[in-house]
Length: 231
Image (cartoon, rainbow, N blue to C red):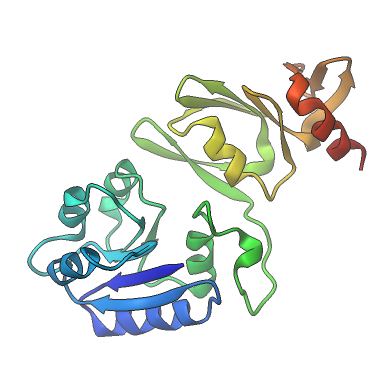
């Protein structure tokens, strides 16, 4: 995956460059001190991923982002927390708050749909994510992944039922299918994903969850779902 850095501080450039070099599936093709230089480069060079600082000379990273019609994957980097929600409103992959660790860097790139965690060269053992932020309206709500009981499609949104509350995520169900791929979740219906660790029983074409919810099993998903739970 080709990537570039847009960052005006040399120390931050060096850290990002080192982190990128330590991941076998990333290829750094350019480093730019301002967005204007990067604009010219992007006219002729294909880029899959862009590490973008928010505070830049000439135009800010947010302003630059708003000018792009077709965007590569974007990971914002900044020392300021107040731009987090604005960044997520622009559908960036992640928001890295400086200073960030290599582990946090890996967590950010693992959110890119084409970058599965198993393709990332970690050089160390890592544990799966235990918590996740759910974007609901203009808020980010942190929940424990294993607290999720099931998720259901609600038009272009996703309803998330946990053991203690219900949330409405701004992301569609297909987004959550990708995010939860490495955890104990399974698509059982075109409109439902269940946490297999929260199943009470399966009867016919219904999954009974521990919170008494009854989830239908779609014909197209039944075979793969049953193989998963019986393995």
